[in-house]
Length: 224
Image 1: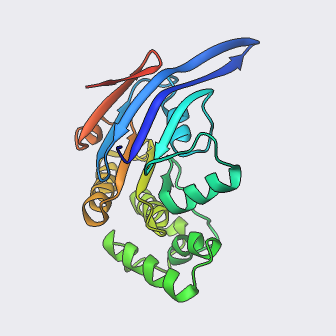
Image 2: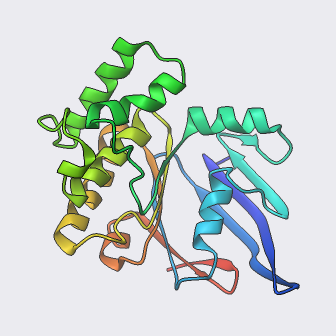
Image 3: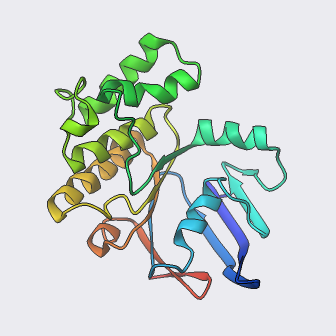
């Protein structure tokens, strides 16, 4: 079985007392280390699909398998453990804590996961060096460029070595040059650590750098 498998995923919401089906039987298989882009116009359910893959939302029906294990029937505490061990998240907004410096922001998930300060610090420094931020360790987020802040967010997402990295429009608020910096950071994470990437994006140049591109249309994924 592939590293990540979605089978017949359906999801609907109620809007103005009317049931609206967003995902209508999504199927997807992703191999370990693959780079996947999901594209499509706003409002078609790309973020909802990413949240389901990341176990932040549950589908109405269908099966989700990660690393050979079905996630459909496990408890909330088990899902939280899956997120901690297997999944990193990067969003359009970097969500860095303004009162913490760069190193402290990246170390934070390690502290929450119970890593010793020395180990978390060493991991954080190595990731920040990898992404060209070794000289920014003690800067506050307000003193960084947009691209630097997003690279810090990527380093934070990778601190616990998640095999799967999910990104939701990570370049959406960035100018083209800064967006390219962020794209290269994702590609480096994939190359250096073998991280599996699933990216939701409107940036077609970004999407073309992935191994596969899928269009979410009429509630299903279409391989382009």
